[in-house]
Length: 95
Image (cartoon, rainbow, N blue to C red; front, top):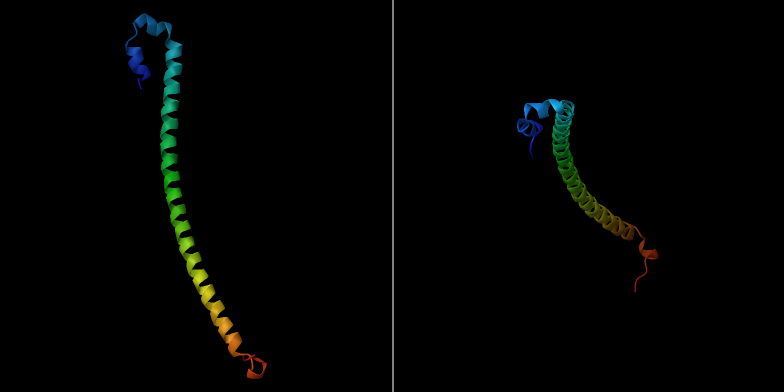
């Protein structure tokens, strides 16, 4: 991308004076665009870091959920075994 100073350098002194206000406005806008671009790059980098942390946190949550589900199933199975063992023999149906 060509900068304003590069374009102005190709103008004659008369053209520079004739378009002085426009040149100054363009320089100000160019500076603003450069600042916005810098901010955008910084924000994209921050967003990338946040996204990576979120992905890692979601992976930890997924693994934790799997482990909790296994533990729940184990407790459920143990509870069923204890419940069956707690039934008195006279109340337990034998085939």
